[in-house]
Image 1: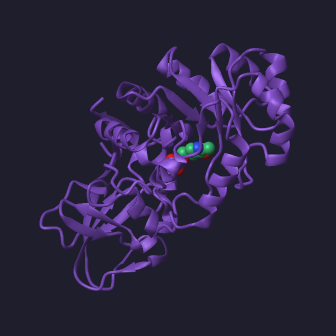
Image 2: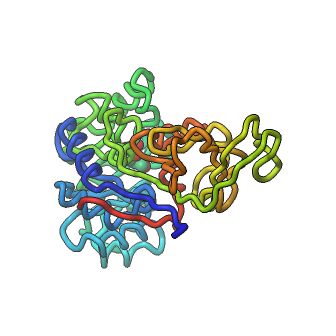
Length: 345
Ligand SMILES: *Cc1c(COP(=O)(O)O)cnc(C)c1O
């Protein structure tokens, strides 16, 4: 079998949720947008529900609808994009809770679904989603009279604990919400690490659950193993792959493995990337192509039948460093062609 195998350790996922829950004041939710950060929202969310998560966040109502099917009735499913035109039936039929972002969404929600639960998203400086202070001041009394279940905002710089934006947003959030009798939420994974001042009633971790920074103590959740299809011996001076970008400088052994950028293994990682043959680090040789990667396994003590790209030796953040990106993009790029195997429950 040539298909590369992505193993998702649900026990590690649940232990990350428990660790973040232990650090959070109040309740801990789980963010499972973008198909559970690429790992399969149904399995991920069911495992987190077993760990004790009772509230889940997604980006779109469509994601919420799919998640309701996986979770059944009971857990609360909140939608960051709020109540968009066309969402009303999904919100109603599948009991989704939109995070209302502006007055238009507010009117749409209370007119179409009077009495249906909703939350409110406030903009404390990120300028992405939510009501700005002036809009909130004008709408606040009317909105509060409709009994929102949550008031939330999102931090722009929480991955950098020393950034002055954190305290500015905390201050803005307090000014907009102090004294109201509604549960409040400000912190994602980064915000949890900023300390209890940032936690309020509910935290909303995503990436930390999946083993990524800024949760430094996270347990790795994903392993990616790629089968070797063919191995060849090179004389010094011979080249590998498109554009001849690797030239053997010594007698070399090159393994051709069965995955590439078509599986979300970012081509931009380029020659910085390596894979593990047991304990031996084996550098990528030549360009990452769509379905294949050449790997220099000359130093491996025996011929490997598979190589590990993600696992105990190198994390999603290691790969992110090679590609000048973040662990989030490594995870959500992992393609549909990989076989997803779940370990634990
Ligand atoms: C994605 C997202 C989260 C989760 O963020 P992480 O950094 O992955 O923990 C929380 N809240 C909002 C509004 C988000 O968009």
